[in-house]
Amino acid sequence: MTLDRSVTAAYSPGRLADLVGTMLERATRGNHGTLLPETLPSIVQLGHPVLRMEAQEYTGQLEPEVLEALLEIMRATMHAAPGVGLAAPQIGLPLRLAVLEDTFATDAEIARVRERESLEYFAIINPHYQAVGTRTASFYEGCLSFSGFQAVVERPADLAATYTTPTGETIQRKFHGWQARILAHETDHLDGTVYIDRAMTRSLVGAEEYASRWAGADIAAARAGLGF
Ligand SMILES: [Zn+2]
Image 1 (cartoon, rainbow, N blue to C red):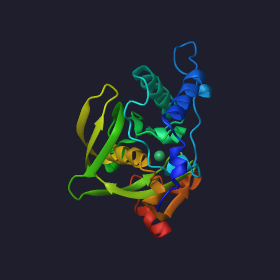
Image 2 (image 1 turned 30 degrees about the horizontal axis):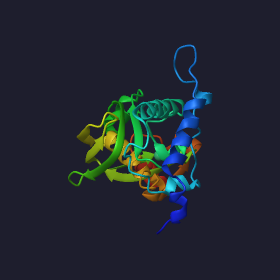
Image 3 (image 1 turned 135 degrees about the horizontal axis):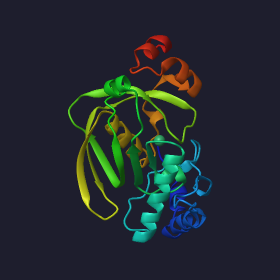
Image 4 (image 1 turned 30 degrees about the vertical axis):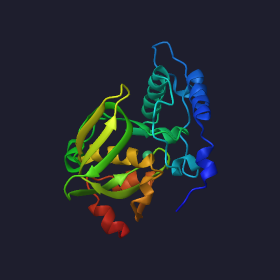
């Protein structure tokens, strides 16, 4: 499948800098120094072509202080949503940047079954990942750019990732369980892949049905009830 080149070429370095500049101008701090949610960028939804592009490798297109400010905006946008990860294309920027953080309190049994451990905030630039071993995990996941739905995705349970930090350090790090799922989901966004591309489509559910029927620790009930 190919994308119209004129679509990706439309995001010249100058246009990217302008888009980021507008976000920085709009973002306003409240009395406590935190960014006010209503001044943050909107999260684009499926159907916007930026979600289907191969995002551009980050090669210093933004000044270091602009990059730092953008990542702060991305983190605040992720918190406001709320979500556990946000990739730059989700705010309309086809750049290989994402932020991750999962410090939500989770029911102990669900956390155990899903291998969901707390993940402190970090930003990833130009990330790559590969599966380690053959262990996989299948659970419901959702996406801030496909609001109101969840579906089951089988993903590697253990993976090795490489990425650059905002200060230019190259990191190699292993991720397991839910953390591996978040890392893979956000990195996939940078290749124009949304989780529904990898999902078992019969498992797709609306938020209310998910919450009332299928939010158990594992997917056994949903598998039986929906036939996937
Ligand atoms: Zn997503």
